[in-house]
Length: 120
Image (cartoon, rainbow, N blue to C red; front, side):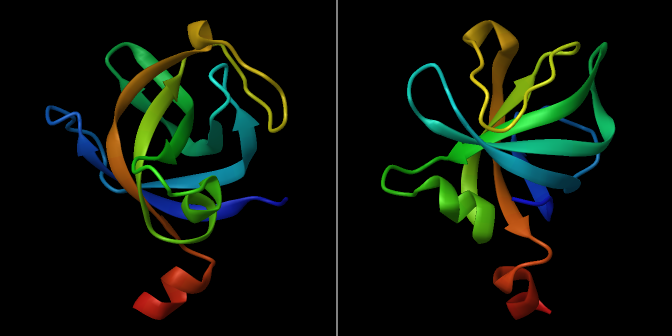
């Protein structure tokens, strides 16, 4: 899978005051320690959160019944997980809960897929 461009709107945490929406690159799917599928996102230029520069995020569909393909290919409400500074995740490779922190909720929208072209 190549990189896919998306916009990620951040709804929560409510106190978040950084850029919104942010441009991200989807790079692949990872299986979490709980067996759930997560979509790996690279953050263009990084995202400054407190004292950490976050370069990667993971998202997974927020609502039961939504599959990971929905987050990859269309608009989808997602849970957002931040990858700790100094940790670099790769598609297909496992990761541990100690590599991540659950962070917020938002909506992902593809920029180079059918959902984006329908909005223009």
